[in-house]
Length: 207
Ligand SMILES: [Zn+2]
Image (cartoon, rainbow, N blue to C red; front, side):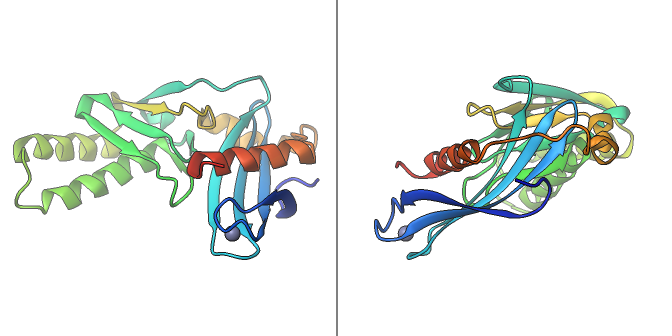
């Protein structure tokens, strides 16, 4: 299989929803030297409307941790965060929890991206006149704005993923991708790709 280009694989199983169609998967594997890779996938049924998307981090050094965290220092703002479906993001200092739903699939963002998304979310909440604790929300807005403008390591971003498919990848590691990709390709057998597809399926549907 080739890296960083779109490939197709037949999952060789019946659709668990309609029990008529067959499932196939389009996927892309991006190799990241000294880490492993990121698998982006989309599963479809040939008969009904079933469509499942997900993103999975795959470490080449064994299992990823269930919980990882990073402080919001300036040097960490560009670190990549891979959030697989079912993962949870916490910012304990702000008492905030965000869930990555299975509907939209996973997402790839950065530390700064998480702070900005959280700020957008908090702004929407702030518009609600019936909000329970407006003072607390104002504090959250203030801290988020300050930390985006001048990151000081004040906040912690905690990623929890019991499926161990989410990861924080340092920016330096990520940028080495282009120069070293030729030498260090993450190789996955087709059967491994198929089993990862079935894993994504299980997160959303009881097969
Ligand atoms: Zn179907």
